[in-house]
Length: 283
Image (cartoon, rainbow, N blue to C red; front, side, top):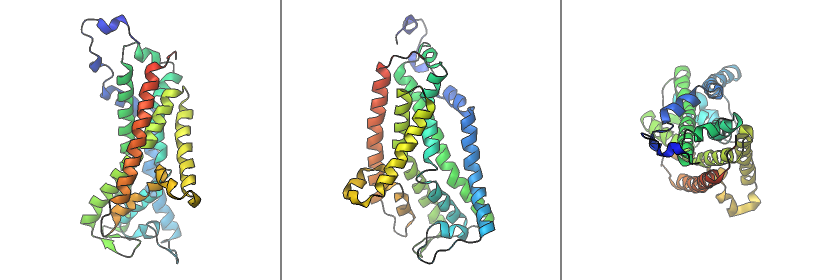
């Protein structure tokens, strides 16, 4: 969309829609407050469940959940384990999938473009802010888990399902690596939700579509008959962050997962920018 404002005195495209303005707009949204409230409450809900039900145990195998009450770092690792696969997908899909489609549903998208905000800049700003809020949500869960777990179970070594343990001074950087991997692995969901957001005027369709596809890829990954084809599914690598919490740090699975996620994200973002540049915006 090109208007006479493009050539108006003092007009600078790079000054339109500052990140701060978009961030404040998104921060004030009710769904942002709801997501923050749910993620903040989850560690306390899990803590209450452990207080009522006691320390979990399984005779056949041990997981991070079974070791949640061992220390604060263990409780943080448990939050990551519980959030991976579905719980953390929701805020990512919501923050990135609701951003453009919601403007269209409110009939305010055309007014933003008439400002005039260049279309590519509009998408770049909205995706950047959506990704920043997604990162905050992903970091918030284990951070609160660490604080709540330390208050309840004390500060100590990170006990591993293998029977080994990591000193707390080593465990914290490893947990940071795990969180960084989860953020990068969710790029594909963020880009998918954002692409759908540019293609529809229904925010629920964009968010729900991204979550649905995430669930489908998780189901397909469980089909062992697919063999090596499962390695092309982002869901196949979603728990590779556990390699960071081993006595010997292993990068192989995490690098493959990040490479796949970033590759898919680049393609999906290219489709989003290309499609939106040619889209007839009437809402």
